[in-house]
Length: 130
Image (cartoon, rainbow, N blue to C red; front, side):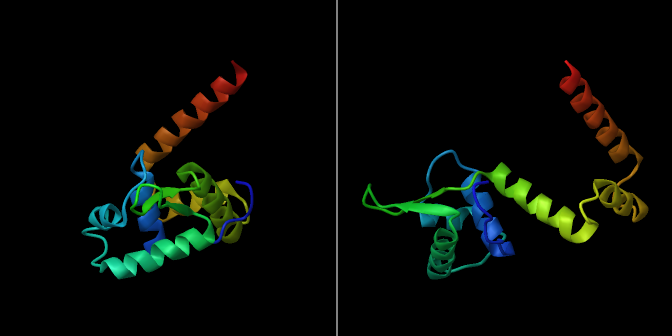
């Protein structure tokens, strides 16, 4: 990420997930459709949130076609990386081991999860040495 982005609230993250789920810019009506079941919003509420996301640098609004089309200016993976880094730093003092230990000790991860994680890490390590 180029610069530190402002944190997304829960509703803002849901809007971004709706936008990230498409390969093309979305109208506000389409975003509202994608939020059904998550948010029972009026269009005006969504428009306010989209405007805030634009101010925060997460979306851009193109008006070239005669309608407002919203697209992400921050890639989903970039956001996740930054949010994960911040989460790990704030809650676990940058220790991935502490994170995994907490998840395991509180029965959030089970043996199958650890096996999957171990296989993933082994694969990453072998790819690094290839």
